[in-house]
Image (cartoon, rainbow, N blue to C red; front, side, top):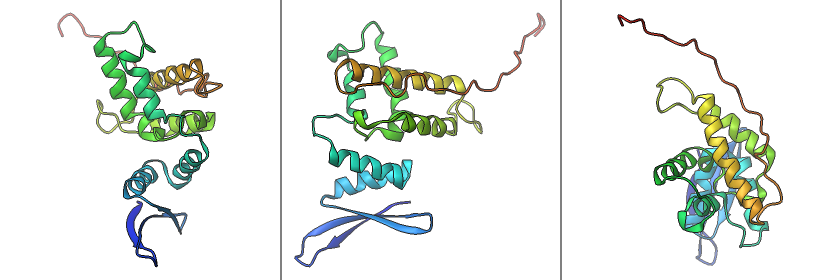
Length: 190
């Protein structure tokens, strides 16, 4: 778990340090603002130090006009943007909830153009391990992962169509088929 603590410099200014233990060694990053440090610390807790640090480096090296996946998803799902049409309001709200509990929780802070096929693969592996909200004690179903992946892929395809990315790293991702379950059929008496 990452810790965020204020540190005073020799000139009296406050800097914010994020620390986390990674493979038995302490890693740290320093921020000028508390908000940035807390966001980075939360990201470290969600996706690990290496992935969070990759996000930090990608943000530092990108031009400020490239939106994060969270910002682009918000734009894509906003009815006023005109990017996603032909769906009911309830469906759109379902997409917003699904995105928030799936891929945005994993790499929502990454710039849209820095997400790689490997990042999508790591997200799929992470998502398959998440607990189901409908079936206590079980992980998310393969069908749910496919649904989440479809929203991610459509969002990234829209980024390609709008010139933000050159490719869709979620396209043709291999997904688990899940466990087949025998159907339960009721008799007339039941």
